[in-house]
Structure formats: structure tokens, C-alpha cells
Amino acid sequence: MESFNPFSLEGRTIIITGASSGIGKQCAIDCSKMGAKIILIARNEERLKETLSLMNNRDNHAYYLADFTQLTNIADLIKEIVSANGKISGFIHAAGIELTKPLKLISIEDYEKIFRINTLSGFEFIHQFSNKKNFEDGGHIVLISSITSIIGRGGVAAYSASKGAMISAIRSMAIELSKKKICINCISPGTILTPLMANFLSTLSEEQYLKRVSGFPLGLGKCTDISNACIYLLSDASQWITGQNFIIDGGYTIL
Image 1 (tube, rainbow, N blue to C red):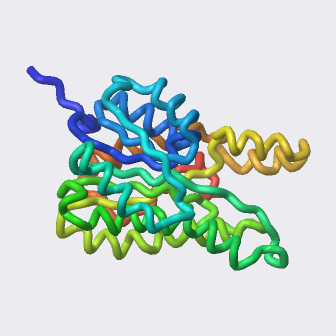
Image 2 (image 1 turned 90 degrees about the horizontal axis):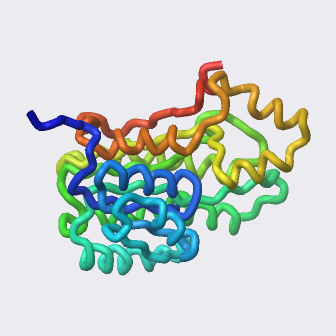
């Protein structure tokens, strides 16, 4: 009897942005273990090579360099990727930057930059995927949002807005993409111990640190907590789920 695994990603070609570190990196590693061919995208070639070295069947994957402040380059990037690798069947948008600035200091340029990288780049990928020649019918799309899009916290208005826009947009996108049986969902993580977050936590006083982590009943999250959810949302196991935002935060938002 053949074994049945509804979470298998065998035969899928999946693009992952932000694959050089943190959540994107872990998603690339873990999706490769589930049998997918991974297209890694980020700005830093050395880090992408490091990610590649940790993946299963490393010769089966490819990486591309991209600067998401330049949105007009994405169409050509997709054309190049599809030409070399065939149609895409899955997409994780994990690329992003964080910005902490009080309202009196934040500028329009700050908003524009964070929206380009965090939000509009992902939307442009989806725009390109709406073309049948680029993306498989029945494919899956996952955007990495944040619980800051749901809860209030001082100093992160631009970041929160960039992540909240994803959650609003996918509800409408899901309706249009459903005609091709494409599922699109968001994941909103709580505090995940990425290298970026570890650096930030190291700058806090003991009092600030305890205040930050005490709100998570299950403690701080790991990158694998998010990559496992992404595997589910990229697999056939989630083929009847679309337009949803999955909050994965160790219980933070229930308090």
C-alpha cells in the first residue's frame, strides 16, 4: 500500500522571497524536505547560498537576486524564473523590513519604502501569477503578515499598516483567484526568534525584555512554527481554505 501524505509538496515549484534569513530561510529548508523545488529570492547572494547549503537535494533548487524597492523589475524576474523552471505552483512572501519610529519623526518616504518591500512587492508577484502562463491552477499563495496588524503598539504605524494591508487585500484576491482554484492566505506571527528579533531583544533592558516576552503564554516562537504552517497552506491538505489570516502567536492575542 502506498503511503499517503496530504502535506507532501512533491512535484511543486515554490518561490520564497526573503529566503536568506529568518522565516523565509526556514520555509525554504523545510519545504525542500517535503519534496518541493524551491526558487529562493533575496538581496544577499552569500546568505542565499548558505540557505541552499542547508536544503535537501540542493541541486534541485535555484536562487535569484532581487531588490524589492524596484517593483518594475518583478515582471522580468518572473519571466526569467518561469522560462528556466516552468510554471510556479506555490509562493511564500516572507521578504520584509521593520521600522520603529514615532509619528513625529516618520516620513512619507519611510511609508513608501516599507510598503514597497513588505506589501507592494508581494502584490506585484500575485499580479504576475494571475497570468495563467506563470502560475498553476490550484496553486497556493502565503503572505507573511504580523500580529502588529491586529494589535496596537507605539512606533510601528508604518510596519503595522504594511502588514494589515495584506490581510485586507487577500480577501478580495481570494475571490478572483478562486476561479483558478488558487488559494491565498496570510499568516500573522507573534514574536519569532529570528536573528533580526534576537538582535532587537538584546537592545532591551531586563525590564523591557520581560515585559515583551511575558505576554506569550507558550513563550516566543521559532521559525519552524511558521514554516510548518506554510507547508500546510501550500499543500493539498488546505485546498478548501482561502482568504484567511492565521494568527500564530503562542496565545498572545487571547490575553
